[in-house]
Length: 124
Image (cartoon, rainbow, N blue to C red; front, side):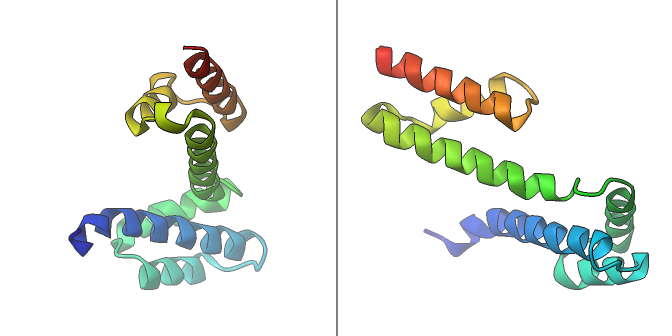
């Protein structure tokens, strides 16, 4: 595989990690707006305008930035659960269809959707 194939995925993971640090810095360590902007500028490839907009959103919505990583981790856990329970019947495309076809859902409801899909797939 070409190492560049993973570049977008790695960039997105880095952004999620930076968001965790910034949200915690703002709301736990009481970082100033300028400290948060500086950290995000130093650790992402984002421009100052985009960084400023994100930081302002994080100041008024504590924990919102954490949702990106929490959602990613939950979806990965559900994917692994489905892969283990379905074995050879698991396909990544079908899993993605289940995750995406129901629109935006709270993670607890998404888990029910995936559990139902696993049960139906097992039943044939």
